[in-house]
Length: 128
Image (cartoon, one colour):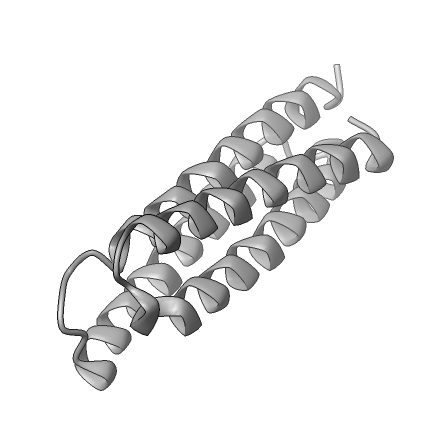
């Protein structure tokens, strides 16, 4: 997968995630969660770029396990970061409801699908 192709997929995914979050915020009364939604969106956007960049660099490495180790390690870091942000938001902001997780999950699913699609393509480019 080329960098321009990834940029196109990232733009599509980012647009879909932003529109989905905007629709959720419009339909549900969760204006209090707007900072969380924007923060998670930016975090997932950054992590997706980092995962692609490191995946692209490690796909052709001599060590055949480096790509999978990097992918699994970064996925674990992403999960812990997202879980930590959600728990921190619950503890610090004390939201009045639990619907704030809906825009979080829409963004998380969009960016996770992007990572899966791009990393499968990058893995195919690895050393033969």
